[in-house]
Structures are given as C-alpha cells and as structure tokens.
Image (cartoon, rainbow, N blue to C red; front, side):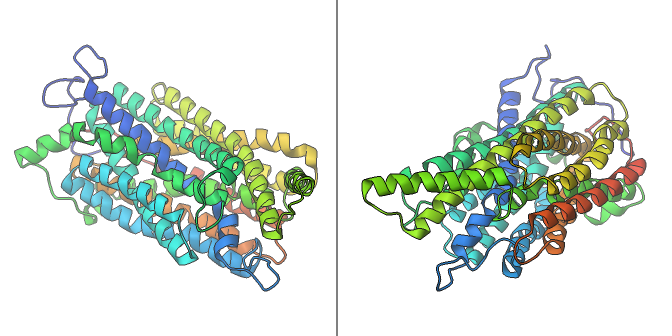
Length: 499
C-alpha cells in the first residue's frame, strides 16, 4: 500500500500508549481494551437479539384477531413483511449513518465517537423493551444498529492505533474481538433467563413477556462506560497528527482513488459475503426450529411446559387464561431455541480464538481467510439442507447443535478477520471512513440483505420451516461462493498503521 511509514517500538514516546517499554500492557492499554471488548461483545449481543425475539415481538405488537389469535404468525405474508423490515431497514439505517460515523471518527476522534455510539445503542435497546407498536420497535432497532455500526469502526481504529507494534496489535484486536462471541453467548443466556424468570420480573405494559426483558438487557454496556469514560485517552496516532496539523480531512471520494479503489471494493464485497452466510442461514434458526411446525423436540418441550402449568393451575383451582397459556408455550419455545443458538456462539468463540492464534502465524491474509471460507462454503449449505430433512425427528436435535457449533466456528471467525485486516489497508485520515464503508455498506447492508432474501423467498402460508431452511442454505451458499472467489483479489496489506 502507499503512504507507508515504519512503526516505532511499542510504547515509545508520542506513539502507541497501549504497551510499556517492557512490553507489558499499560493501564491505558487495559482501559481501552476493556471498553473495546465490552463494545464488541454488545455489538453482537444487539445484532443477535432480533432473531431470538422477533417471533414473540411480532405476535405481541401485531395485534389480535377477534378469536384471540395473533395477526402476525410465522410464514404469513404480513409476518414476512414485518420480519424483512425489522431485519433490513435497521441495517440500511446502520449502514448509511454508520458511514457518517466513520467519517466523524476520522474528523472528531476515536474516543468521542466510540463512547457516544455505545451510549446510543444501549439506551435505544432499553427503549425497545418498552415498545408499544411495531413502528416504535423499528425506530429503536434502527438507532441500535446505528450505534453498533459506528462503534465497531471506532473501536477497531482506536485499538489499531494504540498498538503500533504489529504483533501486539494482532493480539489486541484478535482477543478483544473474541469477546464478540461472549456477546452471542450472553444474549442466548439472557433470553433463557428472561424466559425462565419473566413471571418474577416487574410487569411491562401489564405483562411479563420474555422478549421485552431480553431487549432491555442491552443497556448493560452503558453502565461501566459511564464510570470509565473520563479515564479513556484519545488515539495517540490520530491525536498527534491532529495537534501537528498534518491530519488530512477525510473523504469518501478518496476511497475510490487509484491507490485505494481495489482495497475499498474487494474489502466491501468479501466482508458482505461473510455476513451473508450468517444472516442468510444461521440467524434464521429460530424461525426454522421454533415455529408452529418447527423441530419436534422443541414443540414437545413447549407442550410439556403448558401441560405442567395447566396441571398446577387446576390443582390450585385457578385455571390459566388462554393468552397466558400461549405465553407459557412461547417462552418455553424461546428458551429451547436459545439453548440451540448458544452452541453457535460457543463455536463462534472457538473460531475467534483460532483466528487470533493463526493471525500471528500465517503471513498471507488471503490464506488466513480461506482457512475458514472454503469449509464454510461446503459445510453451511449442506447443514441447513440436512436440517430441513430432520425437523420431524426429535432425536436429531443433538446433531443439529453439533452442526450449528461448527457453522458458528467457520462463519464467526471470518468476522474477527475483518477487524484485524481493514485498519491496515487505509491511511490514518481515512481509517474510520474506509472501515465504515467496508463494514457498513458491505457487511451491514449487502451482507444482511441475505436475511431479506431468505425471508422473501421462503414466505408461505402456513409457515414452512423446511422451505426456510432450504432457501437459507441456497442464499448462504451463494454468498459464500462469491466471497471465496473474490478473495483472490483481496490486497495483502501493509502492517504499519502510522501512515
């Protein structure tokens, strides 16, 4: 890449502030890594929340028929329209405003934009839990996405510039991004706990719906941030250039200059392919396993929960109203599905750890990415086609969990790759803007378009989880194939961030 400068030793004056002269992490380094890790964890926490809560949220906010049946049931055209809207409109909002956030990251600094973005998505998630209508839920999810999209870009730029030494930077980016998978685990656990203890929590709008408490839990990252914020430093590379008057003004147009156009286009498209695998297939598991015609074992668990509640109520002489009985079944279904998705997130965590380990040992970035791309291309479509044939087999759930674990490993590891890669292909004054274009236009818009495609082409009345699984396999396979092919033209980056 052009504009190269050799980096100074870690911890040298005026450069990175993350490492001391002895090579140990400084207090500044620990603080920044802690906030970045929390931000990464709750980025994924917020993104993976929607597949878990969308079915009960649409049923609750979509109104009831005179017979007491929800107007929005999985597979109906109206449900499909709202599901597509909630998946894709926030992604568009996040992509557009996230691109602006990347520009502001270069213009105003990494610290300011990162802290503002975390507060934005945390308090928007809190508001979403109190939504009284689908438009209100949609607005809140758009604000959540905007915060998430901006946070990722600011955190990656901040970390990359705090550690000018290549090895230390790879470690910091790799291990802090591993916390993203803890976010996926946490949201699964939060959903399970919300389902188990919903009846004991304070009522919201007169009810105890687990999906509301799951949404509200997204406010957690704001709490430590409010305490730590005064002690956080600015990026030393950005601040030094700003103080010296040598920081050039960011420009989206410059991303398409002859020196950067290949990096911009290829990074955007291959980034999108990684996200497309997840949103096209893996994130549709709750729709596949938890619907009215979902997996036999999960349907049985919901029925057992309803039967147990009915028996207890009859023994106490207090019959359960039909809406409450449906809520019990829905909460049991949510809990069972969340337990399956936890295996995906454990796999994702393992994948991120493997990526962090390999990033220091494999020089070629293309080779590193292909280690996960090629197996994902073969495995994920076959897995979802196989799931489509096993929904009626209650005994297949254990094998599905194992398959979802491996799918998560292969796919989520690719997300960590981008956090290590993209800071190295753009100069300091364009780092936030370039990262934002690749992550938000590529990942958040083109990538999450996969969910829109899967939901559109699998819409049916009554709901057909088999069709969702088959269409998801096809969409994920196409994205994976495109990404694997285009990786051939992905630039090998410079390892210096000080340019």
